[in-house]
Length: 241
Image 1 (cartoon, rainbow, N blue to C red):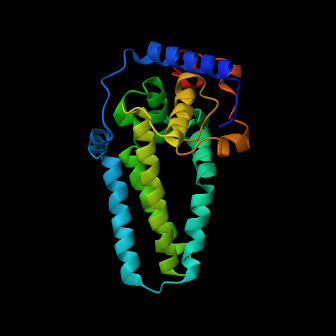
Image 2 (image 1 turned 90 degrees about the vertical axis):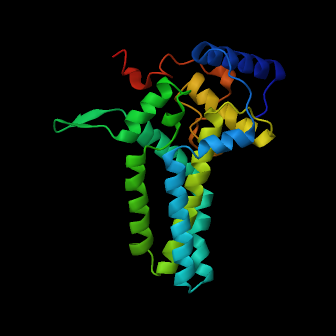
């Protein structure tokens, strides 16, 4: 995170806390990480992604033919994941509904994300919708099977995709749960995403990292210099428009 004047930082924290309190009401009882983890598995998307990961690992083990070239796709995926996450958040989740040739283009992912912004405390809306996730998983499997020169290479890529997807779901859920950050890294990520929801939805798009892709694309300003948005809970002003 960028270094700021302590007084400005304190003011930014105070504004964020006041905005969150106004939107969410009184804080719930403090919960443990263990109970939060157990709650995570009560939702369908983590199980769907985990099943994909197990199948991919099993299939890759049976396939064999391990080569050093298997690693290039996972390494690239992990390295560019913050950028991919940013692009998906901006262009898919924050998609503004529009008509093309008289047909309304508005995906389930975008609709549910607008609902998520309207009520960040609604935990089911934190997770990827299972219908959309089915399409994503099927597409990832097709890419793994058909887009690589060797099946083993594609399956290794699929393992990486499923693993990063699970990390994303857990990180996003944890941020919106009642668990309060303790570690320095998680606290920074937690605050980054809270700013996106309660300060201004046009900034701070990364979820699993902070000051990475946002800094690259110019969406990581000093919070004290950003005006609180009136549409953070109503993306695109859809409800008022």
